[in-house]
Length: 430
Image (cartoon, rainbow, N blue to C red; front, side):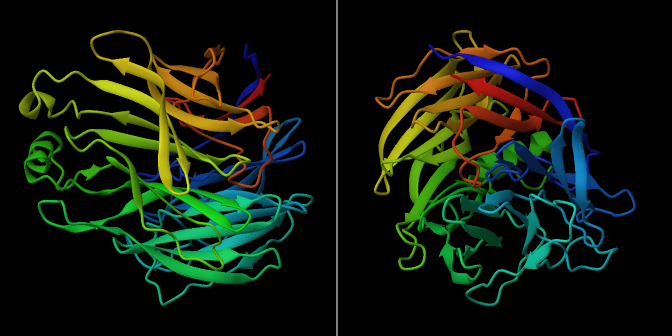
């Protein structure tokens, strides 16, 4: 039986909403938290009161100390919109993906320049190195990067993704020798099935780098393609746009330096009744199987009575198992049906252990945080509720996808509703 002990619950830092469409957890496909031995670091996001949106934030680098979280460095020159994913590489190389704007101070939007900053975990306050990724072709990046960062903590290599409009992802690979030795682009799938065909932009990518193999999972992010639903939502919200997140896609390459990425494969979708999917995490086990975690909701309650009267709401947390690029199995981990009761899943993250076991940390409504073991045969262990005073509803972990080691100690950062703070949990699993 799983034993889960909450060792630490604390506030890491407070923030002021930037009103620019992002926030400290906005880059949820990656992570802003890493562990190296007993050291734990995170990147923070600070709103600049003198700057106007969209680029009205700066990054900070924080370390957890015996006296609490301390800011070791902060950007003293550039501005940005989005939080900054992190990774840890051998030798204590702390890597931070940043995307500073090149636009004038008073300009609403404009071009940006993706960079990777390298800090030393031994001296995090010391000057950092600035690395400029190499791209396959001329790019036109902006503050809307929807970028992803993945790292192999053993080989010391990483991959950076940055979106270009609704066209493609550009990627750049940093090898163990410190060279950006491979680069390319991953075009978006063409959505010929829509009323008006268009490219299916995917965003917030989960990135796993295992040796030279790279695995990606990302969610569709386009303006509502069904005209009738778009009009109905516009009447409710007053907005001229409404983005949909209904299709989960996966692609991969067995060797990013030698083979192109596969075409995008649709793993799950909730198109029938204007539903939604939240993709949460990706883990590659020792046998090379890819574990995907997501939550799917079958209908948009705002327009249900008009278009789907009588349809009952279903919300389900799912673990999908992918081998050789194909979905082999899907396991229902927690299901909420409107006709019944019980907790409704709202968020989750995978936690691999050194011995190969796999756990999931997840959040539900009513607000609570839980831990559960996922068995290799598709079954699940008993869920254990964590005694969290302020449950997190959106969170990240120190994950092997960011170079942190697999561990029975789960480091977690996230937010609690109505609380303008990033909070930290440490959970021991056994």
